[in-house]
Image (cartoon, rainbow, N blue to C red; front, top):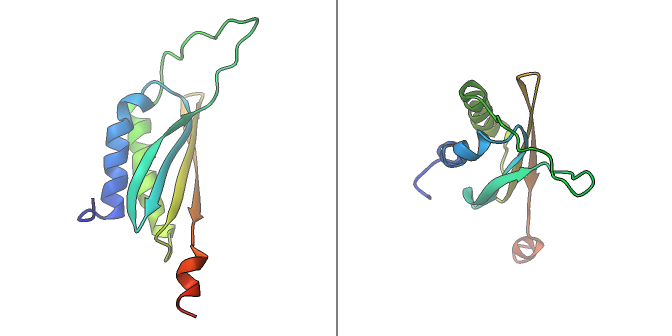
Amino acid sequence: MEQFTLARQIDMVFRKIKDELSHVNSGTVFVQIRNNEIGKFGIKHLPFESSEGVLPAAVSAGLTEIQFQTFRQMAIESLKRKKSWTHGEIMFDFTVRKNVISISIMFESNYNMATYARTI
């Protein structure tokens, strides 16, 4: 992956999880980053709650093609706000209500004190 920019890697992640996103209408897409390379990624779905031991019927529809493209483009554009850190995680929370997708993005930067202790 090292030959790909982080934006290209995000694009690849979204293309890989596109089918899964077409079956869910809320959750969190996460990407874990180390040395500006994505390692682990996936989707955390909102939990299913049972009532009297019965799970609800499966969600019949997830993201539409237009919602998916909007989500993917917003994820790529959000990288412009990532500054100077090379290790961490990005979480893209999403939900569809009344056929409108809402997305919030959270960056988590990680640093290792052992790295800095050697340079002091």
